[in-house]
Image (cartoon, rainbow, N blue to C red; front, side, top):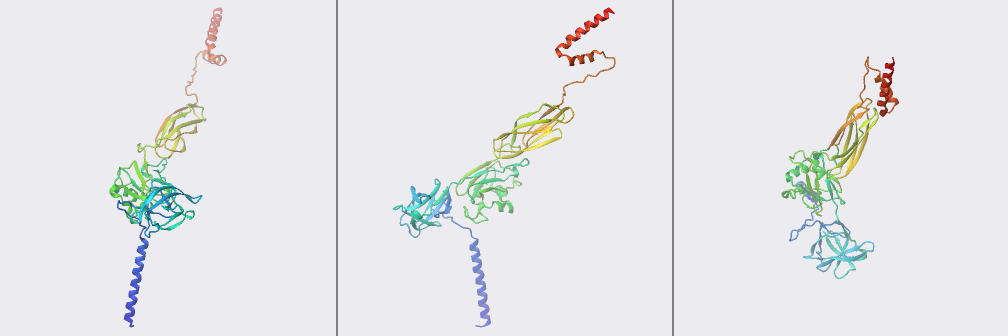
Length: 416
């Protein structure tokens, strides 16, 4: 073999290796696609698996390509994990062309599939494919749970505006995708809010191995024609948002799990810019001595549909103090504080405020209603005498005593 032949073979080997490597890499990057569609266009959510965990509302794929059960029917039975035994029949599963879909809208518990002619055997299913049977006592039951979903705007602080909030999503499920919409927003606006930059995409981009099973960088727009965006759900987290480039701030978002259909609505209160807390009652000392504490208290109520953390600010003259309070929707509480009165007499202003309401008034410091009486030269001594008598005698006797003294004085003057 001459050198040119050896060189040509070497080049062919290198090129072939590169092609195989590229094909392998492409296959590894492909998402897990389970999207079977039947004649009625029902889309599959998961492949049923013995021993697997699934969620109420999912459509589960089953097929028997090798005729393992030799029947066009199976029975879905409850399964008691403590006794390793089957329970009552839930429904009959019909096969068509060796395949079927198990709808799970009303299922919640542990189950097995058994042949129609025997309750002693349980069907083994691997990735949706029937792979024989085992004794019922050795069966691996699959479990169906009802998915929970809580959706609300993030809890606000005293300085939080509506546009600064994300959307909190909580569930007993770890990985799932959600469909998000608002009657006030188009798909283009939803895309700007949730997927407008790389940071938002990293936080919100839907899981590639969850329904609707499209390419990772394209499936968030799967329902774009319906003004719905597909985003990533969380067991406990929040959707990142950016409302800076949309003209209308939405008061309502609808959130539905893509495969189970569980849905919730997150609504902001219609007050818009007003804060969540309102002051429903107040109690403030009307009069104190100089330097004494002024006791102040207010009842506050959260009028918003979200849990809110806010501040209640107490002000007395130039002094102030702040108390933080967290209230559930519709919840109310009493918040109190005290500030020292000034050392001089007079009236001093107070104000109690939240981010949504305020109340104000004045407090009298010392006896601000008394008037000092000035004494000038040439005044009659009766003023001094009256003061002494006012101290020595009750107020009701002062007039009588003064009258008697006048009579005595008149008699003495006549005798002189």
